[in-house]
Structure formats: C-alpha cells, structure tokens
Length: 129
Image 1 (tube, helix red, strand yellow):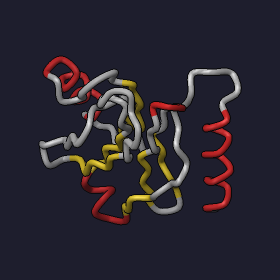
Image 2 (cartoon, helix red, strand yellow):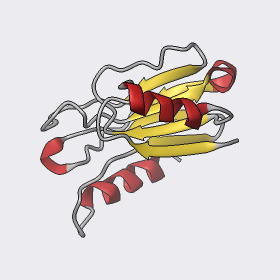
Image 3 (cartoon, one colour):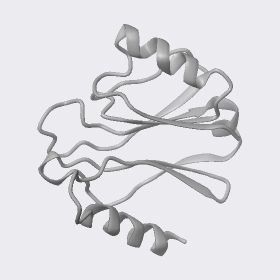
C-alpha cells in the first residue's frame, strides 16, 4: 500500500494543486490532505473522498480530507468519526477512514508546543482500538 500526505493550504482542486494531487494519486492508495478547502470531491472516479468536519475554521481552507483508491474503498473502506477537534480556534475535525484493521487519519493540529489537540486525538484513537 502506498500513502501520501500534503498540506495543500487551499483548495486541492485549484488547477496547480490539482496537478500535484493527480501526480500523488498515480499509484497511491491513500492520500491525506490538510487545509483542502470546503466541500471538495475528487472527481475522476478513481478515488473516494472523505471530508473532515470544519466546525469553526477561521477561513474555509482548514478542512482535512482522505482520498482512497476506489478499489480499496469498495473492498472494505468506511468513514471513521472522531470527536476530537484540532487547530485551536480554527476548529477542524480529522478526516479518517478505516480499511481493514488500519485507520488512516488526516489531521491538522495546533501550531504550538503543547499539542493538546494531538494528545486528545491519540487518546481517542487508543480507545477505538
């Protein structure tokens, strides 16, 4: 399985960024995107798009996404929900999918040394196990 991650800092469907995501997904099974814009769907039919809930974002780019190769998704993929909110006042939930026994999480945390939101995500992940 091949995995990629990228903080797109804005819509991953914008032309220049779309080209990069296209290159990432050529042969990649799971692509984790942060700050991907709001309500975006990868439209080529080769990936299933899962969006994290953006609940208090300072701007609309702060949404997390997981793009999953349709073959993997169709076999046994499912969206996973977390209650953890990251990014401080930006307020964004992780986007997460489970494929078999593995959970893939796209996450954008606080930009601080305390990282309390990431600690909360890890605690919640441990409880899922």
